[in-house]
Image (cartoon, rainbow, N blue to C red; front, side, top):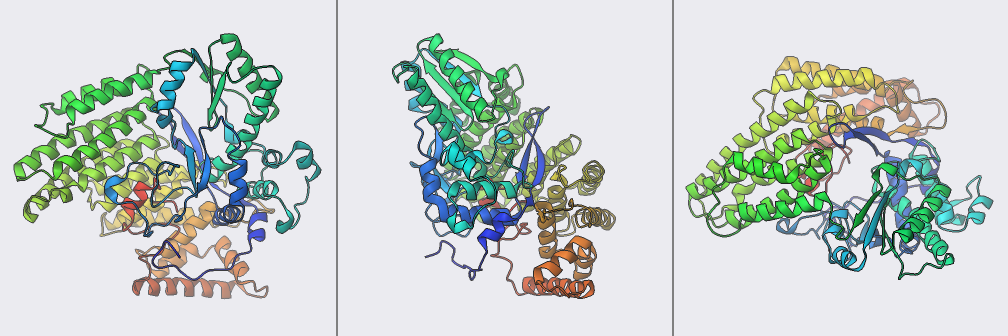
Length: 640
């Protein structure tokens, strides 16, 4: 029984061989706020498959070792039954979608995680829960501790300790035995090493598998912490410890107890190779309401008044909306986290508001007034994001703009002609918002991923940017600067994603002049010269780089460029060597490998001509068929 209606035939894989090969992830920078960035990684395809095999074969062990601590607020509790597939027959109807993480109390049809989680998918849910209010009523003091550089500090061999004992893990260091004889600790340890350049210190940031890996290690440390506190004669009546990933919450009525518990936590973390971020250590007296919580409460009140589900529309104009949202969303520190939390509230309220009110519109003028009012909120959200940017906020803006763009479909009481008129007006407003966002973003640093989101929105919404040639020229300038500054395999790979997203938008329907398209393809050639060159990967055991795989497969599948252009882009040393190796023929000449490569390109074009590409999931999504599903899944269009 498969979730997908059109499953392909199974392919035999050697899981042990996949797990033992070193691969390089594609590391890319995204903005946390106006001044800070964070590094995320996209795993190589072989590493993704190896982790999937670990999940499939060891899920029961992972669930056991990941659910031993009573302190954890987010841990895997069971596999998600239908599996993850965009064509799943078990998807939840679009009208009920709010979040994309399944928990024990919330069942969804498609997932961005193999596991369902207990108890809270996001930290904000904990702050809004009854349990948080009960903790406020029960305890007097709270101290919050944050682990510094959590994933970067993880020693992968710690996983073997977390799933056995320290003595056992040290006794079995060295060469890994055959997989059927190895325990889950050593298998997952090896897979995570090989996914990250073969390194034992630090794991990739971004994949959900890293969270599972880290959670099991922290669960073991939770047990050690409680054991030591028990030996010090502390009981559950004296304190309570809760942990959300790498954030610890210590509750007690006595500050001396808080200090003692914090000291034990610090000691255990230090022994595990971790350290606390002292600048983020915070103490609270009951009630434990933070500034963000206070602003969320104020914003909730304003949203109820300004976005009522019944009655007449309030008389707020766009300036008043902007002032109110700014005053309740932005703290004195212009904190991007506070803005992000506010945008989430606005996004959810606005979506419900549209769905409840649009269906009741019986006249065109009534619907037009509603849409004009809603666009006032959308433009205000965009300005808040551009002033206090982060990559997560960009996704919230894109989802909101997409919801409003499609809202004319909800006006079932209007004629087809009037719905078309509403759609045209929404398209004009969306054009303004997207063009403004992209122009601002290309002028800033480390915004490549955010530009990708808005280009994907423009493509899916059929927005034809009137300033397309200027925008394309500016993006090509960004790509050229990126190439010159990031020419090593460990450098920021965000330019690869921006290149593909730019090609997807501007190569479709001739959205730019021939000169600018020629410049874009020339820039693409520079990327392939770099990534597919024989010197890109360091010599040694490393086999593949995620950026190489992504660019190679994306160009092979690209429906907008000819076979000759593809062959010119791909006829490079690393690609030819990969073809020779994949065929497993030692005496295959480079000339024969090149002929085989061209034949593959011809066959791919023929396959697309037969209409076989629509339901496939490729390395890069060139069509917009599943845009809304991927937006719901929180998956960028440019990453599989």
